[in-house]
Image (tube, rainbow, N blue to C red; front, side):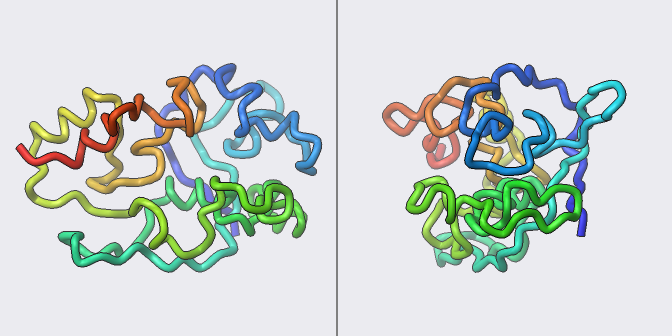
Length: 193
């Protein structure tokens, strides 16, 4: 089943991904070499234009969503942008599972990078919650603070790319959007006025 979702206008400088761990086109361990952008995005074969449509099959994992009494609202669903990330970072879905294909079974993070800290697995209780709905205490001023810091909110939810910049344009470790020295990224949201 194809997993296509609109992410808006694609304007990123794709040169920033070249040579990073997200540049699967140069990784000899990954089969299905299709180009830098094609592992994630639809690309027009004639013009080479990168589409805002995502080019991944759904993750093969079934996820146990994060649960905590500390959350104001129970997480019931993951956003499409997080599912897109987890279509590799679940560890099980093949890198070459593009546009509805199943990909090559052994071509995944668990096989090629066993023990990698980038593997989230299917139990999301061991990681920062994604799909979390921001509580009512987050007013327009707080959302402006989050946006001005360089973080993103997706449909009032915290998703993987809220804090992570998949294209690596920020230059921070772990593909973080902003520097996390002395927990500055974390404190953007985790501080009461």
